[in-house]
Length: 104
Image 1 (cartoon, one colour):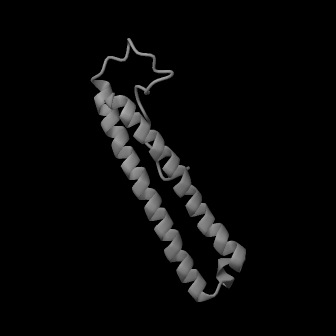
Image 2 (tube, one colour):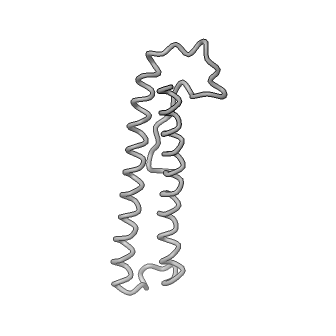
């Protein structure tokens, strides 16, 4: 039961990571559509606001990835102690998850 619950949490965090990665990309797209691709031509206030918005989006993404990786480390540590040989891991929880990095 614990593994099923944790696997569900990890899967939800994976979905959140995708949303937050998209938010980072959307922040750049929004500013580029408004001010053009050449950031050197943006008004100083737009450059400053973009920097703040982009940093906030990246920080939020890092926080979600960190939370997810903490769940994965706990899951994997418990999984090492568990005998998976009698369980169907194709339809149930996985025996192990990989940690994520900031890069997609």
